[in-house]
Length: 53
Image (cartoon, rainbow, N blue to C red; front, side, top):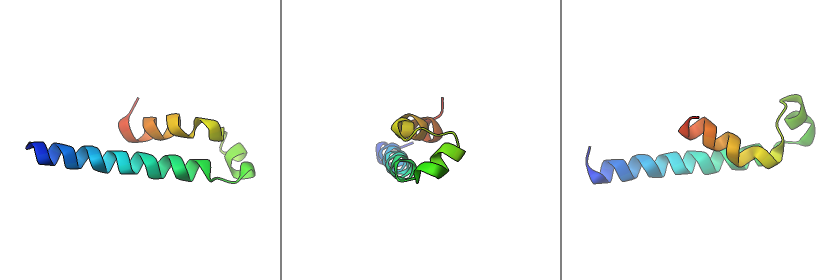
């Protein structure tokens, strides 16, 4: 894997992480509660979803 490919993959993962965290933070309160999601944990949940445990 070239350095450029590795950088591109890392960039794509970071973009996916940022989008996921933003979407989780924008959830309406009732939806977040129904899904048992605390919006303050959006970054942690997004990190786990994109990068794994």
